[in-house]
Length: 145
Image 1 (cartoon, one colour):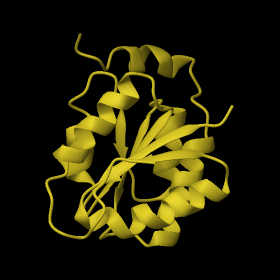
Image 2 (tube, rainbow, N blue to C red; image 1 turned 60 degrees about the vertical axis):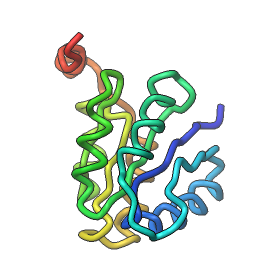
Image 3 (spheres, one colour; image 1 turned 180 degrees about the horizontal axis):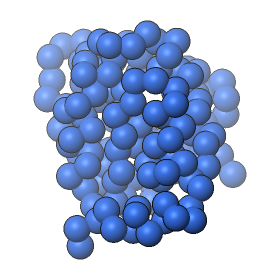
């Protein structure tokens, strides 16, 4: 089954988003872009909330959110009960966010890492399985409801 990826962010993430969409497409992923579609200044919640709602509804397997620092998009996504967004800036964190935290959204800080590193992190994030076991009870306790 093809993994379905939701991608979005803000104006600072548009360049990486466009490149990642192409990369993911060549790997066979189904990608939906939630915007924005230009580098004009925008408010990231306008794009991250719809992406997060669609992921919570089961329309996608994973999300990728990108802004300048990665913080705003991660904070916004994590307001949703069914989202576990991880802000990552290296490959090890991207893998651990999946292995230990069952993260379903990768938050990328476009102004602080190279595109090449972002691509490697995405690849690891999407292919690294959740270990379960002792981590499952911790992940279960994350939700407030």
